[in-house]
Image (cartoon, rainbow, N blue to C red; front, side, top):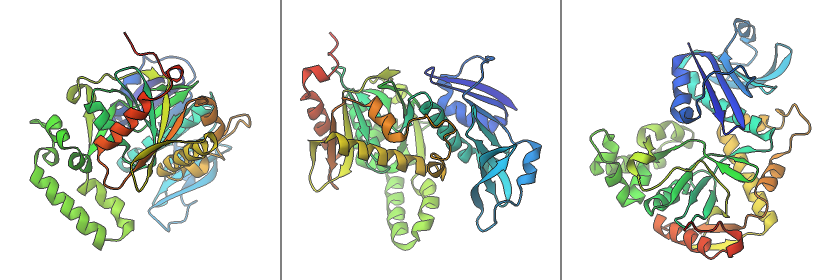
Length: 374
């Protein structure tokens, strides 16, 4: 059993208390740069093992599927219960502090990290911030672009291409948004096989004796491309997510090692906001403020839903009636930031996307951008 404390930009304080080493290792691997010395302060998020009294919850969810989620009463509170084959696996209590009680089962690690992400998001909303699904990079002249889009909208392709051009990194998939500023969250970028296929220079950058064979072998990448094509045509869509980790595995990469010319930023204020959306032609057009807000809310809800049924819980998990809703938080934190719709044509290259974004960012009025460093 291991303890760990994290302080996320003085916005969210997380404590992992007496959890298995395997659970702590996953959190430390992704958020270890926020680690602090143990303190006596009450945390915003408390993670601890499932108590023995959780055994009484066994059988409260029907065994119609291996994984069940429901709301139940536990220790006098309404909580979210994750079960695995009828056995309690994880309890999320949205009180103050937000509590995550998790079993020692190895299979519970992924859902534990997803629940931790939601708990961080919920705690941040109580202070006027949120955990935002977005990428953020700063150009050589000091202008920061915030890029949003649903999963598979090619945010990572665009991020890698901009990093290749010497831009600085703040986020690829998640960041903390608070008081109009963007704050670093995870500092490692996840690369998949389709990124290697779309960016010819990437495999050479990542190549090395310790690199996985999928990165080092172009022949193997082509074989996996063929297997994925066959699987998409012959295997049920319900089974596709189970195949993706095998056919298209994820490779977390250390940016400072493979892209040493790009700095990792701690925080920045956005100068422009870009929403990636499919289009027949490449283009970058201004977005009306109301339409921009609607798209931001939709993207964020899709992200929360991707972490499981937690999005459905987000309305229920508001013990304080004064906590602003998602639309209000986005509107307050991004007020005055110009927004653009960056159309992504089906066959557009990452270089074309990067050029369109950089051109629009350069064309902004001087008063809307951060002055270029001398």
